[in-house]
Length: 220
Ligand code: PRT
Ligand code: MG
Image (cartoon, rainbow, N blue to C red; front, side):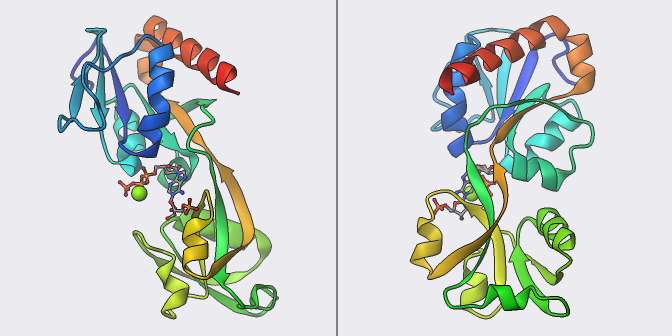
């Protein structure tokens, strides 16, 4: 399935995950030969001729690993839950790119009243599976509106009563007069591995896993 049968392909996304992943890669002896953040290449060689990095959209990382186009990848738990996790082995919480999935509403909106039995809440989010599960578990009926970004705008223009989105500093919510009213779940990035690759390339992948584990433990 994979085009390099003995080598290792690692799927990463640019942005906050990449930044925090580079020290972990280094701990595993994997050094890209050019700066992944500024390079326009989609396939980046590393100093180890058997290891390459592919740069993909954050939400596509699980797909590349699922189909064996990459042996391992790093993705946020949010992305993994929305993907569904089928065909993926998730051995390690890397504890990077940490944030919280939260429910947020406009300042002054009466959230407690809106989630009482019998009422309906209009929720805009990119994370439809997470939102659906969260409100179903609470027994709250919602109308779900799928967005692809800028969720914070939803309550401001009357598209929705609430949003479900990631919050780290809280600055984005504050800047838009929104307030977090409920934590859905803590989020961090996880290592995902293609199960077939783990069998076929066990020695090398296991070594990377162990090195990552050590680096995570040292960072804690
Ligand atoms: O940008 P693109 O559409 O390609 O993909 P992406 O947005 O999924 O990628 P990226 O790099 O933005 O995020 C990758 C992963 O980082 C996510 O899947 C999360 O697991 C993790 N992460 C950690 C975050 C945040 N913190 C975060 N704060 N992802 C997004 N945000 C956004 C949030 O959606 C909101 O718009 O930042 C804003 C809030 O930040 P604060 O600091 O203002 O609270
Ligand atoms: Mg983004």
